[in-house]
View 1 (cartoon, rainbow, N blue to C red):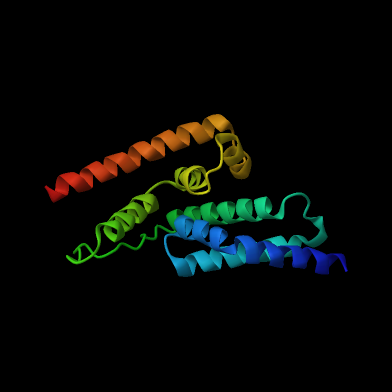
View 2 (view 1 turned 90 degrees about the horizontal axis):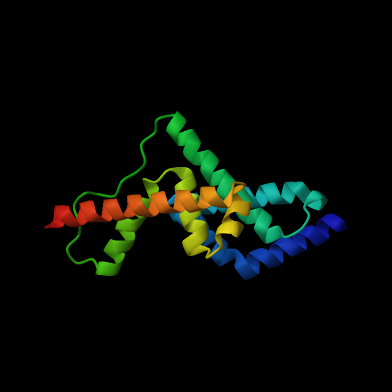
Length: 166
């Protein structure tokens, strides 16, 4: 009976917060199909914990998603796989917002795993530095330095893109 109660709680969490959790997964993976896989894998891990899960199930689910995403990125680097890239030719009739989003997603994919996770937690999830550190299992100083480095890299990439367009 306790297991059924835990699953009811997860079902309620997914129905209430599933869209936001999936959106975070899209930012972590770079595309919706991979995000759905990540989200499902995280849910499976949470469900396997069953009654051993204590505290905030959403927090545990988010931490699981971030850790699985970092593990995936590390695996890609170890296997020396190349991240997919959008076509170099830009379509002339795209709206500026769509183009900017595409460039931002490409730039995010080029960041190291921890920097990317920190940016998603801080600026998409809008967590404080302390909350992000707790999710990632690191110090607040690591979150601050990773955030600063990631933002600097994003700015450099955007400056490079702007210079290429001129």
